[in-house]
Image (cartoon, rainbow, N blue to C red; front, side, top):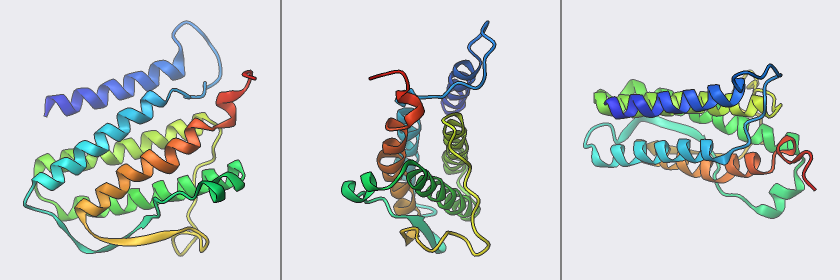
Length: 186
């Protein structure tokens, strides 16, 4: 348990130090270091492994909508940066909703810890995106915009696998190609 708390604290301190750069007064600096995302991916994998090892909480009370994780690189590259960002932001919003509903159906405290950590990490990824001048996602009144590719999962392990794959795929693509991270490099 202490180990999970220290990992979350480490992540928070890493982000805080990157943002503040002690001794330097400047506006919010973009977080372009993919090691931050790799840390979130590892923690998502830990949550998935914990769920697979646990006998409880495998099914969801009802299927949840999650983002499509497949990436057609030709289609992705034809999208402009704003469209890519909106797709990632809406996917993170869906994952936040789905993992939040998973939390209410699980009673195992160890799993709660992993689920809470996943929710905090989704929030932190949102902070990273804001540091890159990517606007926060505002869902339309009925949920996700009609053009977003989604699907439904009915088990906790499927949900957490989607979480890992979404971070490894679309989130990593967006962060690794963020225009602000490539300014000044030719």
